[in-house]
Length: 487
Image 1 (cartoon, rainbow, N blue to C red):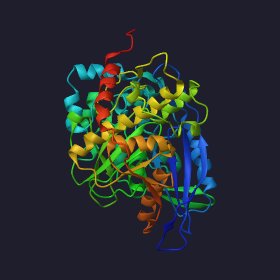
Image 2 (cartoon, helix red, strand yellow; image 1 turned 180 degrees about the vertical axis):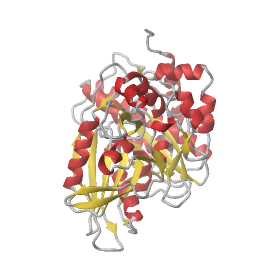
Image 3 (cartoon, rainbow, N blue to C red; image 1 turned 30 degrees about the vertical axis):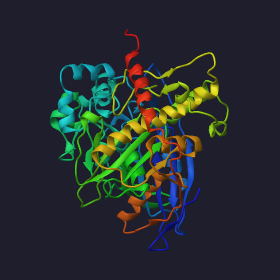
């Protein structure tokens, strides 16, 4: 896969490490004006208990180092990270003492519910701009401190580091232990107004502030790595969805994108203003902060399961190949009375209900596998529409909506999404927009101004289906009423 990039100089090569939930991908912006992926290394997913999701940090580090070696001679490097995934490590040696607790993990939900019962959500909303949810890092970091014996020991010795994966990667690669402001804004521990760790939030969650890495801008001096016989500066570090926002070319208030990956993540630029909308389940966040400049803010809304729901359906043997679900005939599933709520890991924006459960509704003896799969695709589109509709009431979405991720390759899904949104979609022909955004930021920091000249395709609404949203809302209410058994 390649993408044209216009450079003001002829001899620079910049790499981006896109460290995601299922793989580590390495993209290089070449001196001839192309961007290409030169390595994609998958890593294992571990599920030690119900609701737990973990990664092996050393396996990921090996993948990152292999990817850097594969990049060849480069002049700068940027790294993006999974966001809310976190771990504990030895602050002096950089040795991981825990697995990575992945953003999907909900082991701390009971602790979150206790905090909510105590009225703590008002504090997190006011200071961090975030609701109480095990999705964010704060409760996971506290869990590590209290449940990993080595963490308690190291804390007593003043050698414990708790943080998101970006800080761990940087310390291991360059010796600089820092987290950028976009990643920190996803922890529930950063004060959104000051851009620094908040002492009251740290006390609320039980995370010792001294164990956290320094918060720094998205671009700057993150140290240097030894790569292929030379020292290469790391000049950008950013959370993955904000990197994708930048890669999509979103720069001004109202520009928005949705990435349909494992989850679906909608993100909008709001400029210099922080927009708080807790009643709509939207999250104010930092879009990016370039060195020496003020932060640019955004609004975030997530759907926990997007392609994860499709892959789950495939695992149930309801379809064989992804090409098999690119087209369907006849009325939509929801018009046939069949709906699917992709709450397989609970509901995020605008509901924020971890106890909600995935559900097919309206099944009968006449319902076939294709209708069930179609309902899954429609359900992901409906859930994304809930998020985008909430955003549009805060800051009007400007123009077409930019879409990427694995599900953007499905023509049926895109058309259905355009129809229920009643809005034109823009789909960049290249993927890898997360990595491209990271590479662009890294390049700009060293004085390069690459201009992405990418081709796109558009998907225009054909059959308005906005009236089906109310029917889907009924299905969501049912999914929220079906609670898991208590133990």
